[in-house]
Image 1 (cartoon, rainbow, N blue to C red):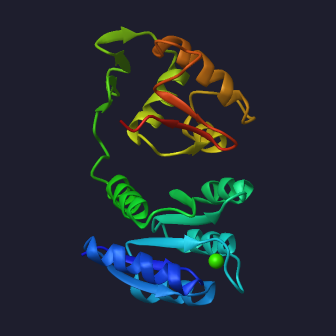
Image 2: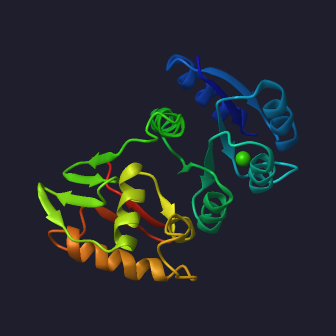
Length: 226
Ligand code: CA
């Protein structure tokens, strides 16, 4: 049974999340501040951490930073509306996903499941990736959209493969730039926008109204989930 650590100082929210996660089959521990969170991670080794960023004492982002020094345990951040810069910093630190309050507990359960699925390593080593009608053959470096082959540069190919590997995951420009390391020599994040524009021109039926590579305003990009 996967074990989840909830770090949330608002007890009402913590209780609700705990109930929903337990019903969904997870074993749940809840703590109310960063110090307890770090101790719990060291002691209990949870499979995933649900981390509220607005915490008393050690700030949630500092907790995430500290966690990333010592572990790769997946983190789903909870943020307040309007804290867009925190979300970006959190994703850059290495959080795996985020939810903006208020959110439905069912949505959290779905995200937790998705993050566990994609971080469990099961998807690693898969050579042909598929999302909707987009297919990416990593060994042959070929991509098809709706059955038709598309010609991509190595940079565009790597960008598409990165996005398709985790449909729905929001990538910051910095993370996409990291993924292109080795095939692209760009050093500033806005270069990603140009690559996305070129990629859309090749794979989107209507590049001006993308249905595959979607913009997440103020953060970056994601591949459509369904
Ligand atoms: Ca809080």
